[in-house]
Length: 228
Image (cartoon, rainbow, N blue to C red; front, side, top):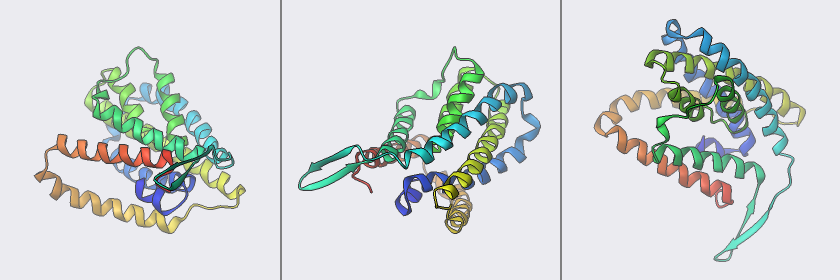
């Protein structure tokens, strides 16, 4: 996501990275499809699809919202954009959640509510995984159900938001840069291959901490207008 945000506008970046996420989630689903819990898929996944469609619609509409103002520091002026503020704060918030040990899960919330919220955030900002995982962890699902059903829900959300993105951006006179999407998918494959080698030499906790801090910094920079 950060690379896409640097290469294009924030709305197109969220839309362009969606097929990359779908490609990754589809691979997980095909490997684990026999472990999907159909009851959880319906109760959580159906509301997630509705939330994703509404969130994707909101993303396109945020592109029309005027700027919130500017601020200055050391002679430099930075603009506050509603869309960048939303995406940046979501990046920083989810990264902070992980760094502070939010992986214990959200408890006492119905599945349909979790699906609606995670789907909406997925459509609006591209970040559905962290919130979905938090709701699933709160239900104490078996590992197989957690992974397989999560992948199935993610595929549905990605397909839904891609369909909405394509239609909405066409109506706004823009289009998803499919050449960049293809490069992103190729990069994801290379990253998976390289990660199998490189991550063996780095403790998982240290790796997640480094990524979390980097994403939090990027999100705050994007939200504040420091990163254009």
